[in-house]
Length: 66
Image 1: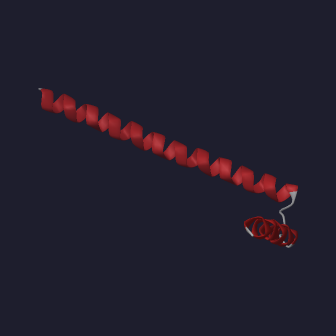
Image 2 (image 1 turned 90 degrees about the horizontal axis):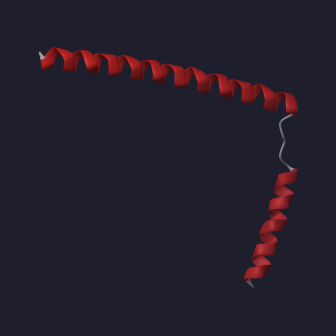
């Protein structure tokens, strides 16, 4: 019984995949570039924020240590 349901599942999955509109290579390249650029921008933002907070913490420790 279970093997019949599994077979039916794969058969239905194959049919559904035929209905999918897949993106073109140009769209994949465009969206990949957008994701990479956004990732770099966000990484730069958080890297800069980390640097500023670290600098502030060092100054705070320097002030309180006196």
